[in-house]
Length: 595
Image 1 (cartoon, rainbow, N blue to C red):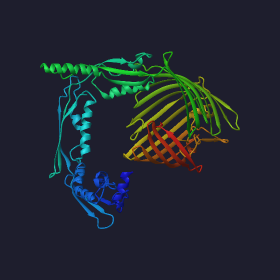
Image 2 (cartoon, rainbow, N blue to C red):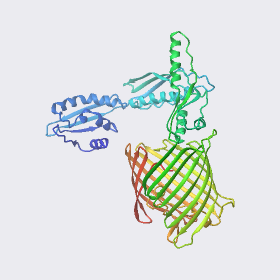
Image 3 (spheres, helix red, strand yellow):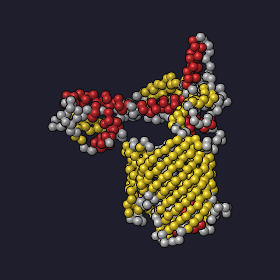
């Protein structure tokens, strides 16, 4: 907020600052672009304005030193030949200080010399030196800024130490600035150090669970070149298993220290130094979670109301991991138990489970029992799964006879992710598609085929301004809709659908109730402005509906404003939306990135 206030001061009339026991004076800075912000945030004139010890003599001293201080600050932004004049008018009651800045021509990056020493590979694929040089982020012709220069050096070193040469060092970095030609000649030298490769897998900390829980997730083979991204991916997979409260995956540093000690002794003795070091063991240290864990939770959702839950997990029952929970909400109740097999060597995650559900939403009450089996595989960027579920459901609507439906559908699902951050995404997209149905007359009252597609994309304009677009569609084909379990039909409305309407409020009218339809179509556009790193505001427009035919889908609109906060546990979203069709306002609250 200080930055915004000072920027406004530079454009408006001089701002008087009243400070207890301190000299009152006004400061106005006339500088183009963002340079006024730079000076307002760093000049002593503004830093010490209102200080109780500031008097007129000290003000005059700061006025005399301001040109030199301003030139030093402007040089960090690439302006090495600025003209700075400072005027002090203290003839009246309140002194006025006016700083005029003409930055002049900026210094541009000239020739860039990148020297790479070492980088000799013993493997079949040599290190791509030219690709490393091409990745230099401060090219010729860019304005030479000190922060960009420091970031560029860190970036090129980081690109090296992350793979193959983790002991690389920046041995030289020189920027020669010529104010007359307005060019900066850059020279950077890196020494690769020896190439590092992985050795055998070592595991520490296992007591309750078999080594296969870890080994089956490891895709790093002995002899693979060091790769930090591979270590992080392996560590993330282990953390996601639920077996461990702490996981550390690294190259064995003790082995590295021992080799360095031996190399130092050999060097002192005059023995030639090898270009590579012996493979380092891949070390996995884990802290196991307790085998059994029970918890109780309470909460509230603007979709389904107040919530209380009891969960019980057992990480080693019949060699499987079990997760179970009883959740009671105002509109929905659920009890389930899921069993997960350890990940196989081929990367498959198999599971099965059973559930009991009851929901009472928009006048329709559904009770169901289900059992399922699922196989999932892939990466966070591309996830796939195939599942089979047997569902037995009873349904009642006020004023109509209760109905019953059973079904045994198979479903294939795929998700594509390309995001800059999985928790707080600001750039990229996620796409999800499913296809399946109950096509065999086995434990099925009515055969059907069902497809869905969902997508969300994040389009940033700059770090403060972000657009988010979201869409969803679904379609179901069957001979008789009423023989299909309501779980597989479509409704819209709620926190992550069409805001401004109640949870699943939009659908097909049946008496006084809203029930699911064969088709679904929703879309959303949202603009976010982040006025602080963790705080933002949003404006949005949602539209969509569900119906039994495409011609009957009459989209309902909702729009409004919201607040955004990046909390330690994920993004918190609070929205005030107006449902145009119902002419009502509604508050929506959600936690986390939901897709």
